[in-house]
Amino acid sequence: MITRFEVDETNKMIRQENLDVRTITLGISLLDCISDDLEKLKENIRTKICAKAERLVETGREIEGLYGIPIVNKRISVTPIALVGGAACRTPDDFAEIAVVLDECAKTVGVNFIGGYSALVSKSMTPADEMLIRSIPKALASTERVCSSVNVGSTKTGINMDAVMLIGQIIKEAAWETREHDSMACAKFVVFCNAPDDNPFMAGAFHGVTEGDTVINVGVSGPGVVKAALEHCRDANFEVLCETIKKTAFKITRVGQLVAQEASKKLGVPFGIVDLSLAPTPAVGDSVADILKEIGLEHPGAPGTTAALALLNDQVKKGGVMASSYVGGLSGAFIPVSEDQGMIEAVLTGALTLEKLEAMTCVCSVGLDMIAIPGDTSAATISGIIADEMAIGMINQKTTAVRLIPAIGKDVGDSVEFGGLLGHAPIMPVNKFSCERFVGRGGRIPAPVHSFKN
Image (cartoon, rainbow, N blue to C red; front, side, top):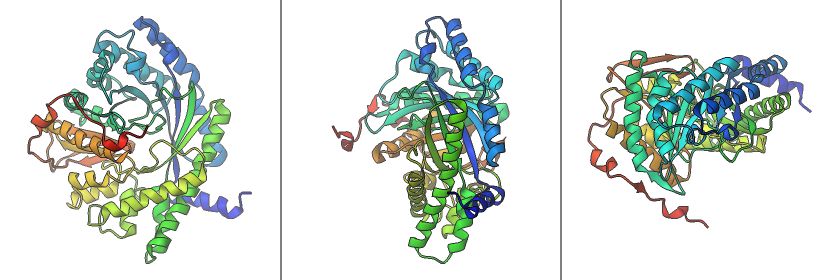
């Protein structure tokens, strides 16, 4: 039985503490759309997505009305397009045509974003994989709602440094293609190590090949709820602190479980996972940085930050797994810069540097997320930053990611403005010493010794 107290408590979390369901993401397999004729392939994709997702937005609104729970985004993820388009596409421009079709589908069904313009190249690249990667700048510059990702490493296979080197150049090209809009294309592209097949969050969502024909994955967020709970135990010891975070995460996840099951029932689509990620927004009171300050830091970046973030991430996951049998995706705490007002303030005060953020990614959910850097940063330096983050994921057997925005024409002291959930970000300084000889060696960094578990 749900008690009146629990109902009142949930209502308070929604009204006063920014609790929301960040996204309902419908995963759609496009494997049965494959054709060696590009026009036929595009028509197959258009027909399937529009048929499967036609009621997604409407269903989300019905659930909002029924339970009073805000559902911020309705999204779609599809099978990595490098796999779907390999038989029909002969050039990068052919792949870019598929991106336009995906964008049209997203607009037709009314979703915020569609993810899966992706390639999985942790060991090597097929010709189709390489063509898709080379098409990313044009694809993202010519679309509004398409998101792209590339998985370049894993604990089992190592890091594909040929892909890492190429992607440094691709990020620079994408930045240039959208230079009039603060290099916005880069905000829709992420590079992964150990990418999960069931991630509902953008820009990295794709529908993995191990998934069924369709699936509903839900991403829940609630940094404001956790912060409000911690305000009542400011002088408590670590045991009380951890119990408070864990219990709060349990309550937040139950909301996501409710929405996921209702969406699954209404759409007739299997329920996949609930991703409990403390995903901040630019709104005041909806910040992971503020949680870290409530734990006891003057600003994120102060000594103790990595330990505090590790504690937070672990307790969030412990609370989540007790609330749902199917917790997946990236569950934990995101630390994007542009999407978190507290992180922005920490950068502006000098408390938080790129190097400290990298240390924090050893224990958080993802990695270097939504970080704006000078537009003249070299492609090799970008590749080096990616390689560092992929190594953290590979060695620690966790998902890590990089979403960098080299803002063309801007330097440290300037800022970029994206609006909405993507927010704004100050340009962060980057180490100027060269790594070109290292990233240019070619080949693959081998998997670590602890990957051999058969």
